[in-house]
Image 1: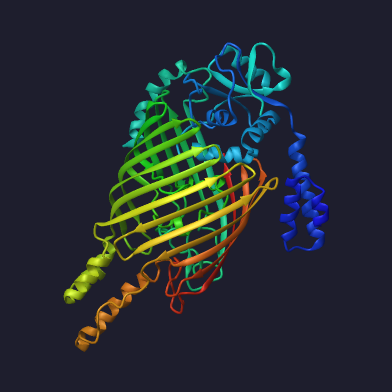
Image 2: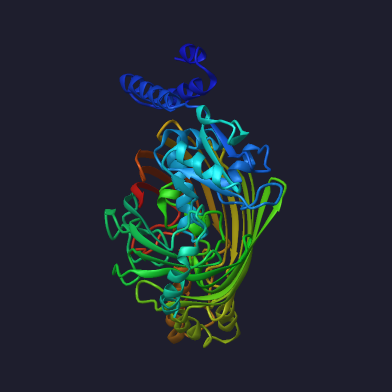
Length: 166
Length: 410
């Protein structure tokens, strides 16, 4: 088992080590390893190149992962230069949304939902406005220079500026 | 009063709704809900495991498998009157101290934003004493079946009727939120023990967030009165200076109750590590409780297994009480009864270490399933926080719990 784990990338090897400790029947263990691999492959299968963008009319040129995270998680309502920042999110379940949160915060869709449930059910805030597609996000972003959103990299043109390629 | 205020504000809000920012996500009304369906089994059949001191019965003695301990359902209405003014009402139905399930108003408050980073609230408000106090009822937000009770039950009340402020500061990549509150709380107790009144509740908390790191500090004071204890301590006062000294030390008549807490969590997504330490000095029969836990979990696809170690210690689990030898036989029997009454409450003060292991499974959208095992060793002379102790119960033993919950949000 450890010999096989050594051949995998570090994360998958770690999964094998964790599973190795589980005191279950050998057959079940193989099943679990298979399930673990399927789940981690499932995550990488949705990978699309997502980039955080603002309107090309915006003064913002670049943002860090933490700055994008703070704006999308409602910790701040300002860009680093002090101007008003409004995040544009995409609807739950969309591949580009899942990829975005996975890249900027390492969070699964359930973790993002849990995060917002915590904010909503403590009366501390509401999640950002959502749109259904990257095209809609782009349209709104271009029209509103105080917004920041994320879109599929293939949609980037002169109307928007990439501020973070996570 | 608060409901009336919200109702009055609605027409005004509707008039202003059209001018809302086209790119802000806020809607005039937003309705949400959450809930937990759970069952728990305890290996101790002569006492009850409960999730709080307000619960009548629980798992162990009252029920072999209890669905009442963790189950609840809640709904919340948020009214965004304008970008500065909002109101929130949260209703929860769970087992009440009188064993009914009549819903109660958990929170109802009006919030006003003086600036995007400075808000004030008035009404019934959550008290952010511990790291996850404010979301304690929403199981879906937590990695575990329930927050480690050793720490979270040091201060069993979680809301206050009054005012608070929240001020957020940005220092580079660090977000620091300072909160302060003032108010009062009334809570009914189970087993016909009347109610508990907390007055002059005030406190502050500071939460610093830096990327995946959160550090939380809190300090709180209140004055606690539980009139149902008066009969016991008034009787002690009949026994001269020693009796009066006992009554003064332990009674629950406007006693300062001071809670201090510090906690931190690191949640980079793939795993989490959390730890908290807290102390509650009750200046009463509930003694001084000190507790800490450390918890960690690692996400494997849709499964997040976790391990938690918790310790809670009370500085008092017994008292010699009145000296019986010096009393005439006619009064010694009564005094012995008082000593027993005093010690039966001190025995319930928790002294316990617990290892918890479990897993969260995000098996479908907005729903999780959790399975958890707790192995607790009670300190000598302590029931470990178990309630409803039956004749034959022996303190200082081992208790195992098995819990399963389904949490959801909608």
